[in-house]
Length: 187
Image (cartoon, rainbow, N blue to C red; front, side):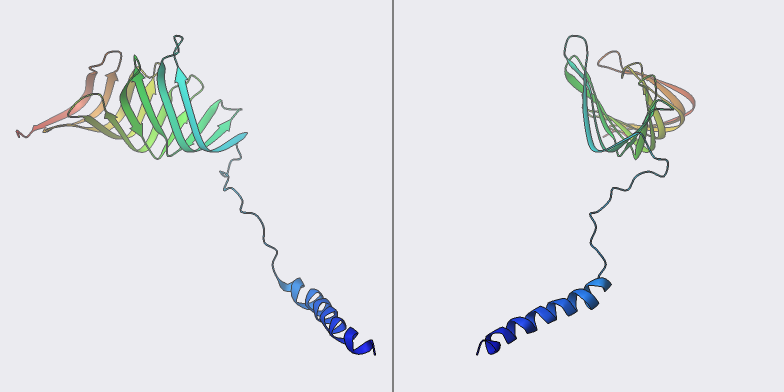
């Protein structure tokens, strides 16, 4: 009389054993998603990086946000993916620089590459500088490019090959290096 009650449990057990033996072996195991590391493996790799730098009086002079950060100890360089760097003077935001990537060099200079846009946010209308490569140096006090640059401020557009922008004052001094063209469109 106990066999009829045992029969359903026996069938469930045999079905489970059949599943484990023949079907579960064919199912691919699910693995946790992996981070896509750069091809040349870095010593440190960070996603969602945020950094704030202060001067010796504790006043913010620079913030850096990036999707990724890859640090290479052998070269002393770090590679930022989709960086947004905000420069400040005397606690006031002055410039915002964005690009597809940037390299932080061993001397703390930052070289921006591909689709580089620097916006002077402390003036109206804002000055917008575009180039394929720009380098921020001297602890955020200078922006330089040796390639073609496009500068727009209000109705003024300037194109040149190379520039050097000194940021040691609230009003920057922009030196254009060669092949300068200027267009002014009055409002």
